[in-house]
Structures are given as structure tokens and as C-alpha cells.
Image 1 (tube, one colour):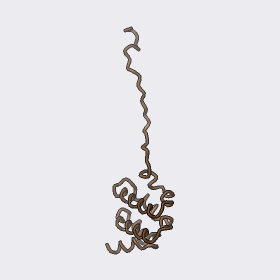
Image 2 (spheres, rainbow, N blue to C red):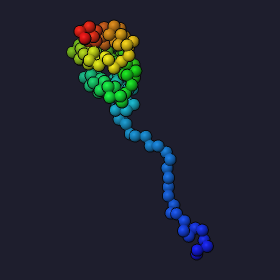
Image 3 (spheres, rainbow, N blue to C red):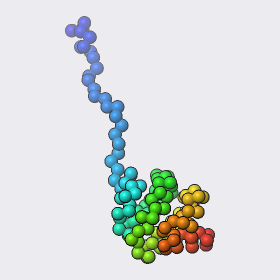
Image 4 (spheres, rainbow, N blue to C red):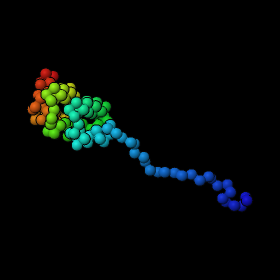
Length: 126
């Protein structure tokens, strides 16, 4: 028994070197999925925007990803004036998250601004 090298061996152990990905819902990749955002109802789009702005402020989302969604003309499609003005106001409050070039585009040329006038009016007041 003592001469057998397998007698005092370590017990078998399974080791996995894979890195498991976290299960993400709307907070992960779906948050910046453009198609998913464009099919949301207007009130849900406003809710999505406030959540996305908060995550961008915390550093959990890149401002460029948010800008790509918000600057699209499809983002402003089928929005009633009341919700459009709220979205414009929310963007105006957090305009400093974006680069200077992005700020100019959102203030002057973005579809959400040309339809509802929320960003430009707020940026002139500050």
C-alpha cells in the first residue's frame, strides 16, 4: 500500500476556467438596442431615456451609445407633444454628458429638438 503512488493522492476536483456571463435584462445590452427602443410606446421611451441618462451619468453606459439612439429621427417618431417636450427637457438637463459636437447637434439639428424645441430653449437659458 505505501509503495502505491495513488494511495496518498489528492482527491479529484473539477476546475472550470470559463468566465460566466451575467444574465442581463433591459439594463444590459438591450438598453442600447436601437430597434428595441424605437418600438417602445412614447411614455416607455421617456422612462427609458431617464434611465439611460442616469446610467450614463454613473458611467455604466457610454454617452456615444446614448447619442446614437437619441439623435436618430426614429426616436422622435410618434411622440405626442407633451412627451416630446418632456424628453427634450430631460436631454437639456443632461446635455453636459455629451461632447461639444454632440451638444451642438442635439441643440440645433436633432429631430427631437426641431419638432418639440426642448433642447435649444433650455440650452439658451443656461
